[in-house]
Length: 328
Length: 256
Ligand SMILES: Cc1cc2nc3c(=O)[nH]c(=O)nc-3n(C[C@H](O)[C@H](O)[C@H](O)COP(=O)(O)OP(=O)(O)OC[C@H]3O[C@@H](n4cnc5c(N)ncnc54)[C@H](O)[C@@H]3O)c2cc1C
Ligand SMILES: Nc1ncnc2c1ncn2[C@@H]1O[C@H](COP(=O)(O)O)[C@@H](O)[C@H]1O
Image 1 (spheres, each protein chain N blue to C red):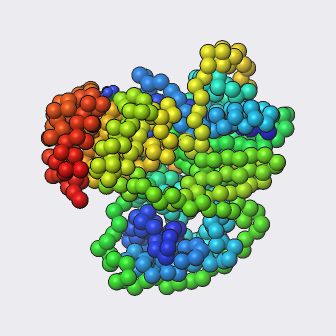
Image 2: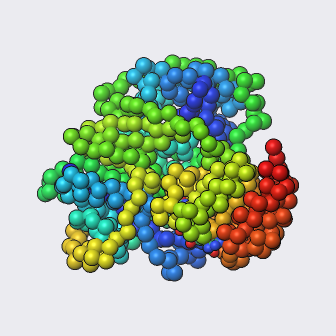
Image 3: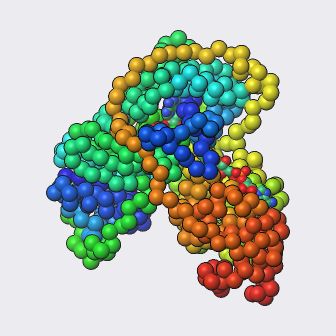
């Protein structure tokens, strides 16, 4: 059996968990093993209803009132108990914040190795896999030697198997309630409070267009030109690390390895050189337009379009032209 | 409060990564070295907490002798003391790394008293294993939370928060606690010249850990299939504006 941790929100499985299940299904098809899902907390039952297309044969649903809030160690303890009861050959989760954290706890408790952010794997002896280093700027081919393989799956590395039957159409997995035995220690770390998101403005991760600014913007004030263009395009403003570490803009706007991953239709990168740690955050952008004084900047090798010039002239000129054309 | 921060020396790769001919490592001949931005924030936070509340801060790394450069960088911004777990520079998997850090913490605590707070980066910049901090916390029987971007420590407790779903999740842990921190926790200061000079003179505690193999075994590294595209230069200077607007229209992002 292959066990997959499925995260869910509002009664729906998370996208990254569906990606994980797609890989789990593929590994199971190779080894001839069924896939079981495990889901925690409120809305878990509802979410299983949408796992029909994902080849999950069975869903272990953990509804204990103690787990109404996220408690990473308790989740890991429950998974460890499922492992003891069902002896899965592979246990996997999405390479999300929670997925990586919970699987690290499972690994630490069982003293097993964990391969984080795996893109693909070939079961067998040896068990081979490819995983991401440097947030995906570099790949590692590795061998995992362990009685039970623990993996997390790199975000957006596996295309969800839509053909297997979109959600409700195929039969949903059977539900098996599971009540883990939890100690006070397992519950010592749990969310005590939540602060709800501020939903005003365009969120960087959902924006269709992102206007990015780097060192070339030159100063905090320089961003007013980018703000104006963003406003005209209904876009969000994102920045490079040089900008956040200079204190020009908050870190919540940083794109890249240690910031956010964006996936807009168009990323307009202004005064950004294109360091790999920045670019990994914009890999999912459909198109990139670079505005840079340097025609040889590394960003030119991944951009689709470029304007060579001083962004302080080019960006206001684009805004003016948009106003002229749209009459705004 | 007594605080320990763990950092890892990594190459500062810039515009592109070059591999060694055998494909097993990054060619670092022309590169500088640094630590993850997450860890830089951990270092800054330790300095700030000790400045505000007293106590002592320690930075620790497992790596070759040259990793003393990263220890000195941390001491240059105000960390009090440094520990090098010296290796021959070979890769250490996360189990071996965590094991050696746990042993070192036990030794250090036996001599200097407990660390009230231990800070790790959320993940190392290079291998991105997302686990060394959890393994150390588990071995020491201490609470751990990952992804932390806000810390309020005092009175034997730590209130730590992290971003979740666009909002925040808040955790409350008893001390001693272990946290995995992320960039954005604070804005690290730049080292001053006197800070650098002081750091140069400070002594570094050295230990020689023995590796225990365990994690996934690297066979080779490869660059991802490149997204390289041929760039279409659509203009130069402000005169390019009409061509840009035509492009925006064509891409359908100028609608409404
Ligand atoms: C472990 C690690 C993690 C990192 N994580 C991130 C991350 O998450 N996000 C991130 O962004 N970086 C990250 N970095 C830093 C990254 O390596 C680069 O240092 C950074 O992205 C460079 O920012 P930049 O492009 O703004 O600046 P620079 O590299 O200095 O580039 C500035 C560019 O602006 C151009 N320019 C200058 N003036 C003008 C003008 N007037 N008009 C037009 N163009 C102009 C220049 O030609 C140049 O191309 C990380 C680094 C490490 C080691
Ligand atoms: N060689 C090392 N020396 C000191 N700390 C390390 C080392 N490797 C990892 N760490 C710490 O553990 C964190 C998580 O690393 P990892 O689990 O490898 O992604 C890093 O951000 C560091 O704080």
